[in-house]
Length: 254
Image (cartoon, rainbow, N blue to C red; front, side, top):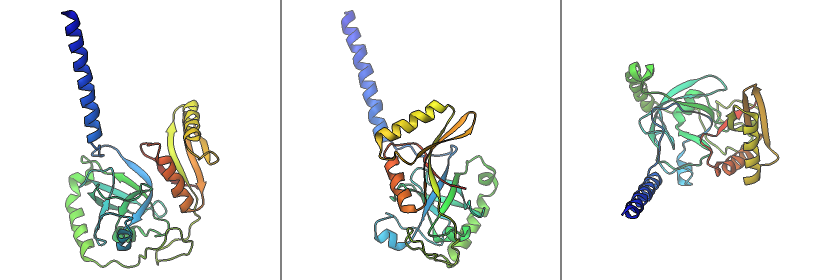
């Protein structure tokens, strides 16, 4: 009798574990009201990109709306151009749109114009705004008013071209030296950073561009780079993305 009970007990544990694994496979965890920040390149929407299947959905280029693959829809984000400090508040309209993982979002031409982004180097800092923040509590009405103005106003001054081009295009393009690195993570212990570098060397072809930078006595950063052109940067980013790191960022070297 005891053996039967024991067997039944183990069967229940196995079935429960299988059910949990199955549920994990079916569910997609989107970032909601938790702290989230990512610095990297954005993709400025253009109808031609959609025709070329670089973006799967259409977005109104006059709006203050964005696509993001992880943040919940109807969430607000603050987008900043680190090169000039300009920022704008935008709303996530979809997290189902498909686009290259190299880009942390898809933004409209209106947003790019507001930030004076260089279309050949659309580098941004994106921060999720908490529902409990002052903005959500007091400024939601102001955002809606600004959104209506943006949606009724014309968009000009931004021309989207090949991101790999070195030629300066667009009235708002700012000539900057292109030099970026891929930030994998920051570690408290040096040996943890060294173990991460070893893993990347073992599992990718990115052996010569790996770097560990000591930021303080208790902070070690693992980087890949630097890169002086966007195509090599994107190629390396896509390779490291296959290791499924949580939040890879692209940092501009000073």
